[in-house]
Length: 144
Image (cartoon, rainbow, N blue to C red; front, top):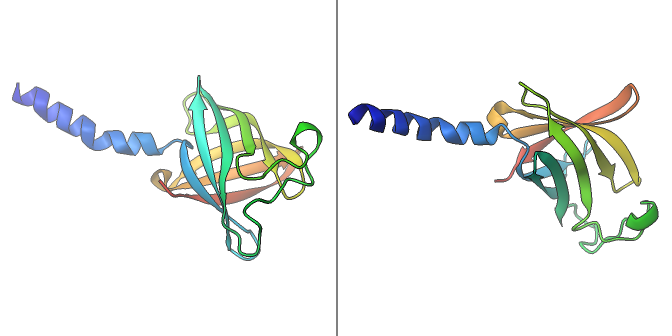
């Protein structure tokens, strides 16, 4: 019985580490030029598919009720807070990477091919958006 308790204790000790190597959670994004906090994004998973919504605008001088004026179609002029900016990403087999989704940049209204990679034991998230061979990677920081 002591062996079972020891195993259970060890399992409980490493379980939080496993849980963190996922993009699921609340993340803070930053402006690439100024380093200023831009927003908080809540990433969730349902049936193995990742999605993410803007939960809060953090950028100074930006109206918290800002609309996505550059967005197209049904997203045009929708509030940025609550906007689904990440959709359709799935975990790559045998890797801590999520791909095959899209990410929306509300500042220009464009969708990019998405790749999410948790790093630094899941405390940071590399978010890569690309069109064809070109793209850029941002590093988001886990809030919770």
